[in-house]
Length: 492
Image (spheres, rainbow, N blue to C red):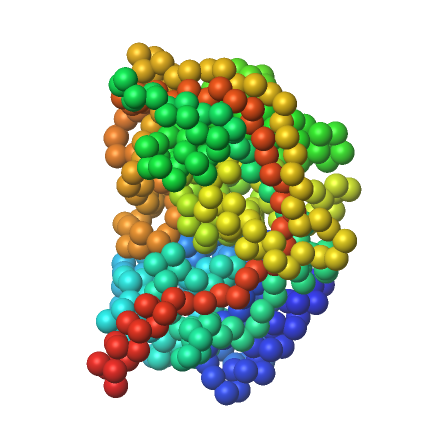
């Protein structure tokens, strides 16, 4: 198969650097094709008689399955751990459950290990490692013959060091062996140019008992700590406004690309079903809802990948590494506000296809942190593109939430948890699985639970449109560097 230029360069760089060290870290923007690159690298090393077996780790079962398929295609054999296979593909959640038969392979064979989205695994040593990072440090770091660690977002929300990565002592910047950013990917027609539409409102009224407060933007509203961001993204009128614009844009794209798809990222399972109801009521559109409640969720995602359905709604299962190239529109209604998660979601709509129209749009509320993330990645825009475009929406909103009607009310998710379909939870940094509420069952299917406050949105919605590209310098915090140096002193 013909590789992209960056994939060939990265493979050659890795093989060259393996002469000096065994661990290689590659930063490549989401959507660039890291899975294929790593699979071809594995086959190249095998053909050069430098390795005997390949083991892969990734953050979700569907990505692990994709790796197994790609490796099988390269090696023309199975990668499922059965007799005759040359390796296997696991999730990070399965690290602690692997038996000694797997670990003994490292003593008997030259094992090449692939780590996908390595930022989920933290630790420079066992003292500052998370559960997954500790397994890698104690069982793989010194035993593997070679490794390649890949990421599209090389930092953690908790600022802990990424396992197997090197950092500059003074600046704290991560040192990557190969870097392929979004600017280069756009230049090479590997990734699309993302456009972000941030929806805001200039007149918001919040009533709590006899007290009434007025706000002129979501920034103004959220800075007062009266209403949580979870209540914004679960507000029916906010959902309607974002859905209308996202669906209009997707419909326009489908006039050219008949199979263009859209992803809506929800905050909880009940929120996902409520969004499906709103989409059906205001636009007459159906949508596939995929959550951890469905036993065949992976099969549903795979089916959507290849069919022509318009919308898919999920909580966190289609955020990182999941390959659905026909996605061109995303509606971000998640209550997760970390930059890592935001960028990974954005990456779902960046993969170039052979369709005639390659536009990509992300719609989101104008929450201050999310807008900051968009501006930060806008620092490296291809020549000729306007960095920021402001537009005014002329639609009045005059709906007030009724606390006696749960279908019109808001849901607060103050402490979202990570849920996995198959294996136990080890790392709360992993947001590639369902982020849901605590209840086993939803008392109001497809509706939003009640709250004792009323948020009325009466003004004009306006949006800021950002065309973005590139990544900022990636720095580990001074506090974490100090902690890291302290741990190193204790160890050495």
